[in-house]
Image (cartoon, rainbow, N blue to C red; front, side, top):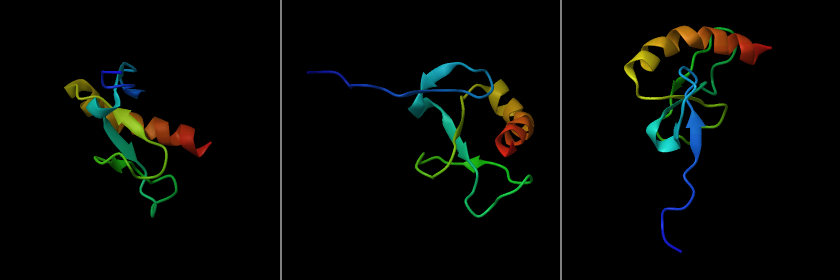
Length: 78
């Protein structure tokens, strides 16, 4: 058996396109922060616990993510 095997894919929360997991930046809520004012922090090692939000490397997605996070946090609080 050759090849790299299965490459997990994740979807960018901004543009909703699918990419290999390693090409995306993952954000998670810090464990010590909770409540409506909590905001995600980068998780470059992709190993922190919790729900991850993945953002692709496109400039427009990086610019729109901080604005979208408000809506994502509202959905999470429900």
